[in-house]
Amino acid sequence: MAKHVLETGGEVCPFPLIEAKQAIKTLSVGDELVINFDCTQATESIPEWAAESGYPVTEFKKADDFGWTITVQKAH
Image (cartoon, rainbow, N blue to C red; front, side, top):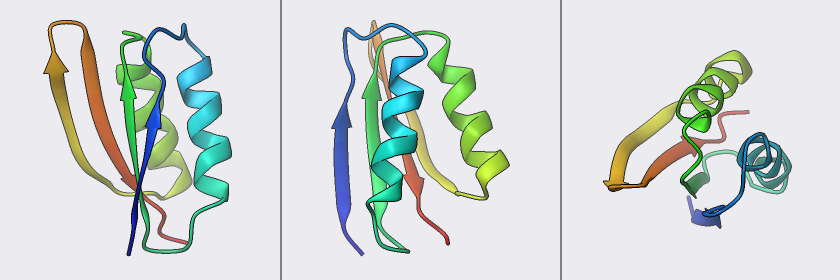
């Protein structure tokens, strides 16, 4: 299992989600995608996409005053 980091700071929604969808396609099953973002709407859209897609969220935290980090595992 490997961790891959996707930096989307400064990008407006929906681009963090779009990039996450593209990035996870390139991962192997069991790998994790760490998404760093500062778009408030992505705090809802990324976890919703992960749940709908069957990808477990293994971590979700506020990184600083303006950003968050979420880790999604590719399950299939």
